[in-house]
Image (spheres, rainbow, N blue to C red):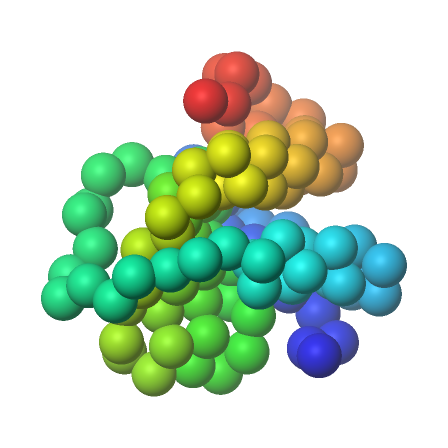
Amino acid sequence: MPKEINVIFGDGNQLTISDKVTIEKVLGEIQSINYERIEIPDSVGQNFSLGLENDLKYTSTGYLEINKTYYKAKDTKIVVNLDNYIVALGKEKIPGLLGDKLSR
């Protein structure tokens, strides 16, 4: 369990999540997703990426990177819910985040 999650939003803003309950919720959601291994993720725009640990990253589009191996989420409902949750957390702390656009 990481002590913090580093969030880098698509507009360049950054946020560090250090609240244990929030970290457990985010990791629980990411772990509950079924993934399939892929060669290279699509590089379509994303709301954020999460730095979970040294070689573990997750993006709002449902991609998980572990030691330079990529996986794509199969359950889009969880991906969308997690995207909305992280963007809402960011908007609480960073006014005008993502140009104040509505998330997907």
